[in-house]
Amino acid sequence: MNILILGSGGREYVFTEKIAASKDCQKLFVAPGNAGTATIAKNVNINPTDFKGIAEFSLKNNIDMIVVGPEAPLVAGIRDYFEVDSDLKNIQIIGPGKAGAELEGSKEFAKSFMQRHNIPTAAYATFEKHTLSEGISYLQTLNPPYVLKADGLAGGKGVVICENLQTAEQALTEMLQDEKFGEASKKVVIEEFLSGIELSVFVLTDGEHFKILPAAKDYKRIGEGDTGLNTGGMGAVSPVKFADDNFMEKVESKIIKPTIDGLKKDKIDYQGFIFIGLMNVGGEPYVIEYNVRMGDPETQVVLPRLKSDLLSIFKSMKDKKLGQEAFEISHDTAATIVLVAGGYPEAYEKGKVIKGLKDVENAKVFHAGTAQKDEEVVTAGGRVLAITGMGDNLEIALKNAYAGANKVCWDDIYYRKDIGQDLMALDA
Image 1 (cartoon, rainbow, N blue to C red):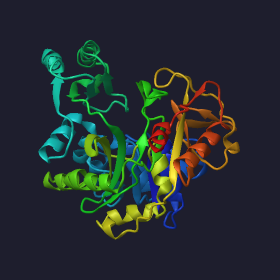
Image 2 (cartoon, rainbow, N blue to C red):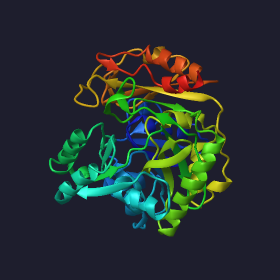
Image 3 (cartoon, rainbow, N blue to C red):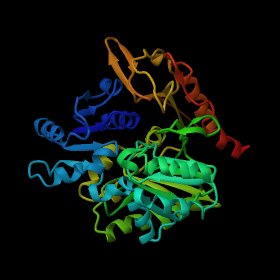
Image 4 (cartoon, rainbow, N blue to C red):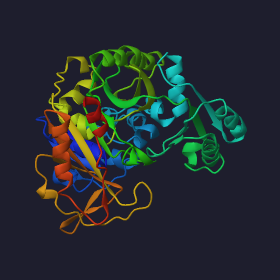
C-alpha cells in the first residue's frame, strides 16, 4: 500500500514509524512532516488543509490511504472532499467527515451531543458577543473556579480556568468582545468546574465496531505543579493507575458505547479516532471534551504500547471489519517528556541547533517541531521533541525518559521536571 500521512508533529512521527514497520507498507509520504519523518518516509511540502494539492499528489502517486493527524483538515471536511469525487472516493481516509469532526470543531455541538445522548458531562451554557451581559450574570450563579472554552478550534489553547469571578468576567469579555481567540471565540461555552483527576481515553471506530486504546494522562500547563499557561501538552503517561478495570467498565458503558450509538442515531458515519478527555470525579467518569484525532503528546505513550500492526488495523476499517482485528497491548508503562522552545506557549525563537539526539539511549526520540538545515537538525516549533521511556513500572519509564531528555540540548531549551510525580505520589 502507498500511504500519505498529514501533519508535522510528534503524533505524525509516531504514525510514520508504526506504519513504516508494517509488511503492507510500500511507499510512505508525510505532508509536510519534520526532520524526523524525513529519515523514515518521504516528506512532501503540502499543507494538510490544501485539499486540491493533496488530491493531485494522491492521484499522481497512487495513494491508497490517507492518515489525518491534526484536527484542522478533518473539521474543514477532507473526507467529504474525497468522497464526492469519483477519482478520489476509493482512497481510504483515516478520520471522520465534517459532521463527525464537529465533536471537536464546536464545543457547543459536543455539549449538545452529550446532553442529547445522556453522556455524563459538566453543566454548561453558551454565549455570544450580543449576550455578554447574560454570560456575566451566568458566571455569578456558579462557584469558583470558572471554566471558559472557546467554541471553535484554538490550537489547544482556547480553555481558560479562572480562580475568581472578577478574572472570569474579564476573560469572558476578552474572548467575546475583544475576540481573543479570533473566530474560535465568537461563541464561548461556560462550564461548571469538575474536581477530580483528568485522563484521556482513545477509541478507534469503523462506525460499527470499536477498539479501546490504552488510557493516558497528559500535562497541559507550562509550569511545574500544573501552573502557568495551557499548552498543547508538556508530557504524558500510560497506563493510568487510577483508571482500573472497574473505572474503565464505567467509561465503556456510560461514555464510549453511548457515543458510538449516538453517532449512529444522528446518522453520522464516523470512521477514525475519538479522543475522550475525561475527569474521574470520585470514581465516576465525566466527559470534559471530545477530539476527533489522536492527542499529542498522548500518542507518544499510547501507540508505543500497541504491539499489533497499526496499518492492518486501519485497513480493516474500510470494510467495517475492525472487530476482527487483533489488538495486543504491552503491559509496559510509557512516559514522555516534551522539550519546548523557551518562551512557549507565547513568543519563541526558531532555528536553534539541536545537539545530543544520537546520545539518547533506552528511550525513543519523537520529532515534532524540527527541521533540517544543511547537515543539522534545528528547532522549528514551540514543542520540539518528545522523549519516551518505557519500563516495567512508572518509575523506570520516567527514569529512562528523563535520562534521554537530559542528553538533548539547544539554546533556551525547557521541559518540566515533574511529569508523572503526581501519579507516583498516589502509589506512595
